[in-house]
Amino acid sequence: MRVRGGQNIFGHSVGILMLDTQFPRIPGDMGNAATFDFPVLYHRVRGASPDRVVRHGQRELLPAFIEGARALEREGVRAVTTNCGFLAKFQDEVAAAVSVPVFTSSLLLVPLVHRLLAPGRAVGIMTVDATSLRPEHFTGAGITKDIPVVIAGMETEKEFTRVLLDDQLELDVEVARQEHLTVARRMLAAHPEIGALVLECTNMPPYRADLQLATGLPVFDITTLVRMVHDAVSEGLPPRPA
Image: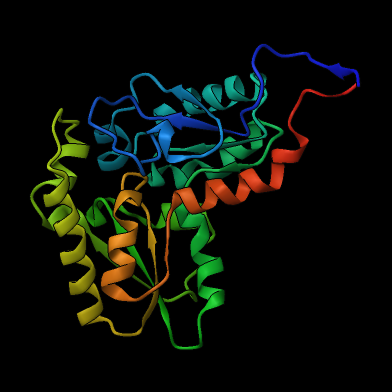
């Protein structure tokens, strides 16, 4: 069999636009390559700190994310995502800039998850900072006003949000785990109509199994979406028959 090349490296299905960070990323975190059992390709967006992206939502970062998406496309990825759910606000612009599929955020799963639930049930969204989650993030993700959602943020706790948004070098994983369980239980106690959880933050997947066990609910996150897209594109990866 003869095959055709045309690019520098091969075998990666999904390209991930990374914020410019130094905080630790444990297995399960989107920024830890061991999270996936298939190759992904990373591209760091210089200057895109968590504070600038989440707390301030700076639109002046958009050109850097667009150029990053184009760079990943040139390297041969078949789809592009990001490692911050708050980049949902840039979904349309980044998708328009490249020819491969783009999924900026796990928030894109919310309309699908809502359709999976019985009438009267709501989608619970756990986010790194509920005070920074705004209508433009929902608009970018296609979450319309007729989709019932309940939002709970981790900013009420002491460890997880502080380490991530302030880009600290050390994270107490067990404290972060307990914070996730505390926030989820509090949300469900106040809103028993929640039928499933979507984790906005790409650093939350390491705690997904704990949340499933504690709540008994389906829990979706960005790695759910990465795996789905990988399955959709992996058989078409180059090199392909000449």
